Image (cartoon, rainbow, N blue to C red; front, side, top):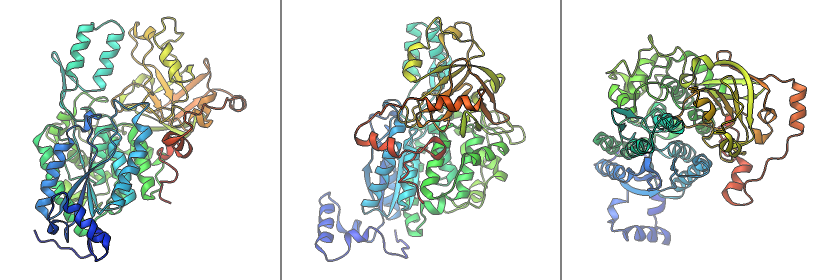
Length: 565
């Protein structure tokens, strides 16, 4: 197909010329069986594939890559697939978040170092989507995202299960002796029925929706189930479109503008998305040189209604969300709150893309006039316990606990919590505020999803299913409960959380956006001055570099040397 190229292709610096290395590069590529005409004067499209058998969310992306290649060939481009590291949420220890920045560097440098004119980013699992967006933002070569989609809904007897959310609920029943070993085995065999990411509005689903809201995918891409043939169709169309984007020189910096990021925040609030989206969007904005703050999230949240009734905040699953109209239906419903003129990967504006969007199920996607909540899914808290901010997900919390005052029970670290949480004599009551320290970017290390502290066994046995929990950790987007997260600065960096002691009174007031340790400022300062130095987790390698260069949660936990200044 004839291409309208108005500039010299980046890849031609590798192929064209009379130098020895021009000759050798052409020859070495021909060793793969390609003829010379397929890579000269054609856009070379890299297919950045995070496929891995150690990542069930992305285990089907080999097939998706083949569909992308069909589209690239059809549009007159030359597709070349390449791998990067893949971050499997379920398998990586201590947390896949420790390696998000490493994957973003892998993506950026693979694009930058190779003869690539445009790139299709294949992702899906929680950290693979933000890592690829971060890397693409830094490389700033034309790029389009194809997410892998949610897995099929789980099934146990007559109950539909959302991976993650329902697993946690049923595990509490198992811990309390209300499910037998045989029943628990049945749940295990039916909760995850296919490749693809969790089928609730967890981090993976949220980041797929955010990629679409940013304009980095084709419209309607985010929620197509992983095994659905339409996932391959949109992959092929994306392969076709990236060739056109190269011809237009449409780059991530031309799509992921300040307006696009504000659109993404609004969609995150409307869908009741994962609190992890806050950290990832801060990091993406930092790569683009956009000054994004925690207060921007709270500002958008206060005016954006929560309208998507999907677990863990609601009742339905991602298949239902897709069939109801997906992200386009949500964007159409809150279009008045969006920057409708923002440009997207298909070359059209948000307004143009939404012209034909409809909702097909108002139980799943409510109207803005009849929302599930007048405010969005994430609130930003501040106070003497979190001077640089913390987040809570009110849509997944117990309304009675959103304003609460109670005595703290403090765990110094995750290991202590894990060792004591099931103790039959743990001195906690429904009024207790569970506090866990040293679980942030530096303290854990890596900022793991430990923030949903399990309910103490002594309370579960009494039928109590939620208490206020506070930490400097993250939590899975599939989690639920009245959980305060991302407390900044973290304990290991000398934040006030490290001064909290068992018995101290803590006050949470979500409506007022406040979180306070009810202890005299002088006493807090004295305790901080006596704080022992945190242990050093690494003496070499990537972990050593991570601890020295990672930013705090309110800055996106990116490396200081990767942010665009």
